Image 1: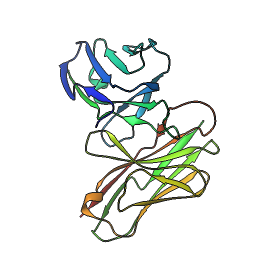
Image 2 (image 1 turned 135 degrees about the vertical axis):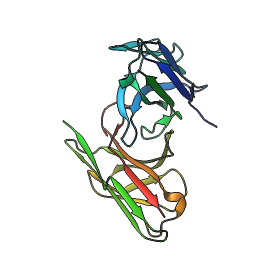
Image 3 (image 1 turned 180 degrees about the vertical axis):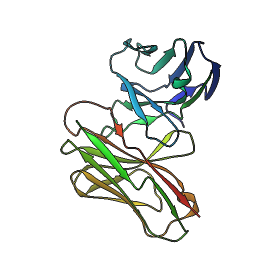
Image 4 (image 1 turned 180 degrees about the horizontal axis):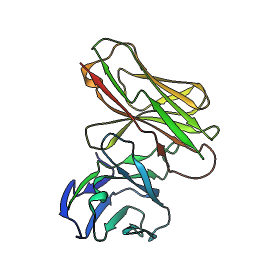
Length: 113
Length: 114
């Protein structure tokens, strides 16, 4: 059973378009992280959200944590080729051990010029 | 600032040979350390984690083992590699004290078993 479901799995868009990536679960998380990973490299942290309903902005990226802390979304405005990569969400469940994160399978984004 | 290193960056090994991947963290003390394996372009599978020297917890039964001989050093090993051990191995750290779930990843090691 995949505890964190990401959708879509693949997304190919043109430069300048907007997009939203979703991360959903039936479990409650104490916090949730979004990472971006490029081929052959380790994931790089984009943001951590910890409060239900929280919205964080990072330039053209907007992250939201659901009110019930079970889901999150990442919205990119006016996507650019540099946004291409694998976007991973990860969270720690309440009662989880040793700060272990549960990862979604990722959304592979391709932005074409 | 904290940094995390992994080596080697890439490795090609024959089936049945031993393995040793190393991960070191600088700029912090008593971190939690993690080893993950990532299938091609997909999510991460937690293999081992450690909350202190000599303390190793395994998440999945497998052909691999881990050790933490020093506070900021985490080693992934195998006595005899299998074809199925091929993959991208990532080490990560998290502050051991304080409340944060965020993990920070190293650059990874690409392992190919032939």
